Length: 246
Image (cartoon, rainbow, N blue to C red; front, side, top):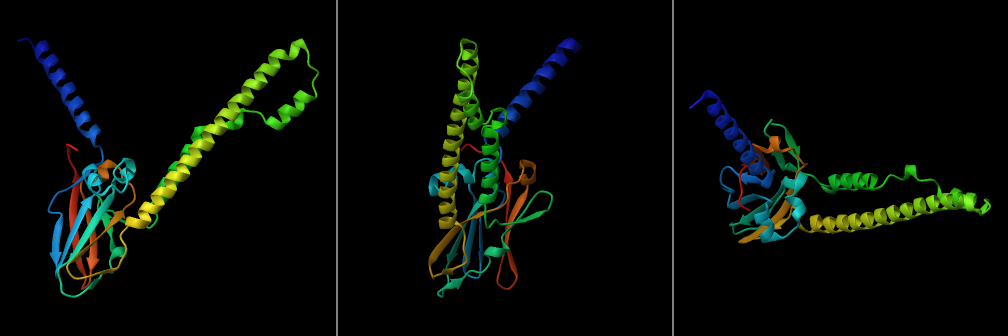
């Protein structure tokens, strides 16, 4: 076999390998999975922390936004009290996500901050009206002009511009109404399901949603979810981005 033939086969193998790797990451680019056990037991309490993946969404149905795009840093935390006495949680403010570079991020009290940024960006990109002239000035100008055969093309052009402006204004308003509806819906979901410190009664379970700032994929290749319980004990869970069939 010639060296050229070998080189061609080697090149083809590299291309195929790249293609499969790209497809592999493209299916679920930012999906977190536990590296170790999802459960930890301490002082008669069972702690469980699960990344909000599509599989978890099928079970809880909070909202797909929590596993899509930049909001992949959402977790469900479950606490089961095996003690005979009620347990008062007091660690919501200690939730921290440590990324692959050992930088830490506190849980968000207002996750919609990032959603509002998207709304703003979408509104600004939806339609830029600077190229259209002020309609009041246009109408006044048209009223002051004499109608003549020579002005017909001009009127047609002005009418087209006005139609475009009405179309884009309507489009922007529809998008804005939909985004506002979506934001209100997400606000109610977060208020209903986010983790709040409260009493867990004996032999009962409490759970809530914890959301961290959005992070790029490379920061999540190795990350840890940590929080503190009384007597300065730290509960920690490790995660990474892995392949998923979901």
